[in-house]
Length: 140
Image (spheres, one colour):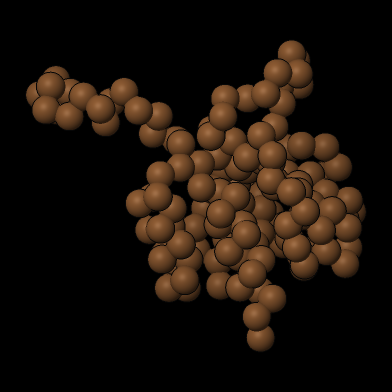
């Protein structure tokens, strides 16, 4: 209760929305060679990836990106095929109502590579981390 009285803004703001400080610290961790894990819904055209959005965990590290199912087969890592570029970053819509999800909460990152398209739906600064991982893999 004391924390709320001292810092009420920290309790009222959305902790999942990306802030510049959080994004910068995540990019620093990624640049130092550590692996970050982000909740992620994934689908892709590659046969190794789910064909419809499936919830899981995306690992972004020095060896590239990999994904595993949230609950079922969570010990089976699926490597994300090579990705050349980010095609678009949008705010995804709800399947049930078609209305856009709350702004800033999730981003739909559509990417492309030699083996086809891969789509990620990630919270917070996940889209920035994915873009940084793709750009890092493009540099020799």
